[in-house]
Image 1 (cartoon, helix red, strand yellow):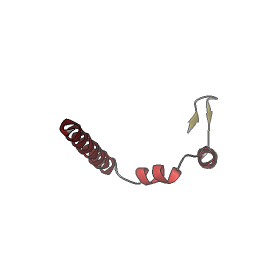
Image 2 (cartoon, one colour):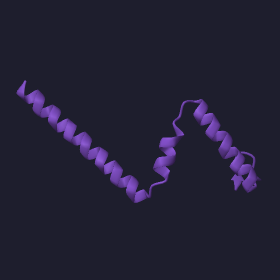
Image 3 (cartoon, helix red, strand yellow):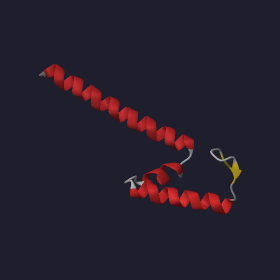
Image 4 (spheres, helix red, strand yellow):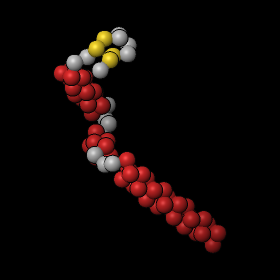
Length: 72
């Protein structure tokens, strides 16, 4: 794997170390890595289906809000 900033090649040991330290920085910054790990454990198709479900839910909420406001 290349380090684009320095142009040096990294070994797999160095890469795994940098990923590990990146997780620590992310966790320190308050990023919930479990959500990211959960998402990445799904296939792209499963993630697309989950996105469609969320979009459909948001559209149903929007529709209900419009109906509620029309009655008021």
